[in-house]
Image 1 (spheres, rainbow, N blue to C red):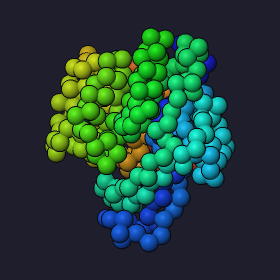
Image 2: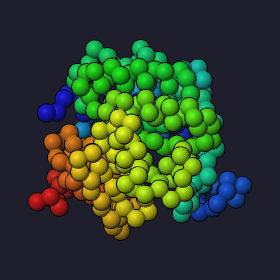
Image 3: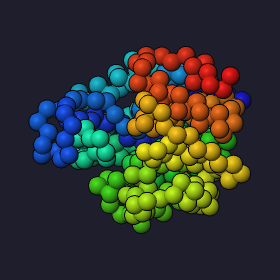
Length: 301
C-alpha cells in the first residue's frame, strides 16, 4: 500500500561540470557543460517524472549555485522543504564524458553538512522509500545523520535503499566504506550497484552477478540490483532474474532504479519490477518530461 510520500532521497546534490566532448582525462577537457546532479536528486527527479511524490533532504550553499539546484528540483516537481542552506559553498564536481568510467574531481562543500533537524521523523510512517548513497555516507556529519535516519526509517516500515556509487576519490578509506555499507544493509536495504562500483570498493575486476547478489544478501540486504555492461541482475534470496540490456537502456541506472522502485511501490513482483526499471531506462532517452506510469508496465501486459 502506498504512503503519502513515496520517496525521501537523502544526500548529495551538486553542480556537475561535464566535458562537452568525449575525453579520457580532465586535462584534455576545455569546454564544460553545467548540469545539476547528485544521485539522490536524480533519483527523486525520475521518481517525480513517474508521478511519485518525491522529496529530497540535502544541503547546499547560501550561494547562486545553491539557488540553481533548488530551483531545478522545484521546477521538476520535487519537494525541497528538507533542503537546507549553509555557509559552506555548494559542492561542485568536474567530470569527463567517457564511453567507460568518468574521470572526476569533487570539490566538497555543503553536501556533507546534513543535520538531523532536516528529517521529518514524525512523518516517517508516511514515507515509502528512504534512499541514500555511498557518496553521501563518505563524510561526517552527513554519514552519522543518514545512518541514524536509516535506522528510524526502517523502524517506521520504510524500504531503505542504497546506491553504492563508490569512488576512492570521495571515500578514500575503503575499510570504513565497506563497514558503512554493511551497516546500511542491516536495515534490510535494497542495494543497487554497478560492476564499476563493485570493482572500486571490493577490488575485484571480474565479479560474477551471483557472487555480488550473494554477498549483499548475506550481510542483510533484502533485494539487490546489479548492473554491468551486459545486463541487470536482481535477487532477493528466494529468486534471481537477469535482463539483458537493449538499445537505449545501458548507462541509465538512476532511471532503472526509479522504474524499479515505482513498481515495487505498486506491489509488482521482483521480475516485473526489473522489467519496469529497464523500460524506464529506455524511456529516459526518449521522453524529457513527465512519463505516463502505464508505459513502464506495457511489457507486463
